[in-house]
Length: 137
Image (cartoon, rainbow, N blue to C red; front, side):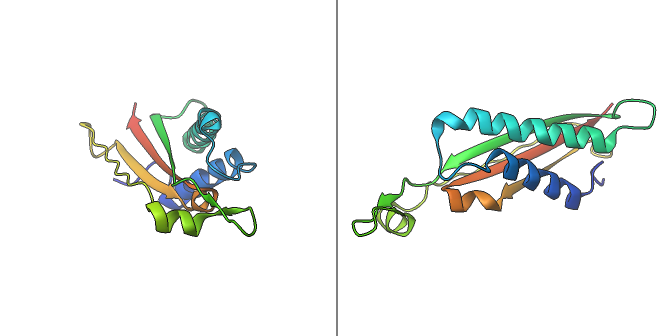
């Protein structure tokens, strides 16, 4: 079953939501994660509901969105430039590992899920993994 929003559009929605929420972020900041996740989830939900709404009524789907932000290894500060040195941090400790999976029991002809990793997070010292689930009403 094809998703109610084409996969290319889902990717666009996810990237735009992450770009907006993380626009001022320069690195992982635990105190900001709740705000970032809230912004990402709100924007994705707003977009998929809007994209699937029918002319005279609400969307014929229920949606659930999950956003997970994972911190990379903390950058070491370069002795010469006093700037964060991600390469040195990776060579000393490597990156954190993470595996995520989801499953559901539903009508596979009408319901489904889609996941992606936001590529723009790596330069900011984080991975952002998103999942969108839909259930036909």
